[in-house]
Image 1 (cartoon, rainbow, N blue to C red):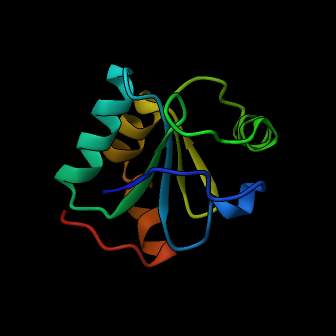
Image 2: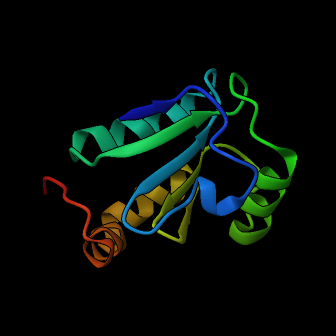
Length: 111
């Protein structure tokens, strides 16, 4: 996991990119911690920004929420595809959709 310690820019594309997993998170959120642990258990490399500790521009957060339809944390992206939150990640893991997305993006994992 790469923890982002400063703002990456002012646009959605500065954060969410093809070929990577990105999580908009909150440091105190147990669902965020669980989602990150799921990805760590799968040995998926990902980036996470703790939105309560790092100044992410409101325009970026607004676009993330609009594109994903998710206004809560975590907000998980595989490439330019929104997974949603922790429950959505767990569902994608159990139904195989997560592996499909990771494969499509060329992201390695341990099955």
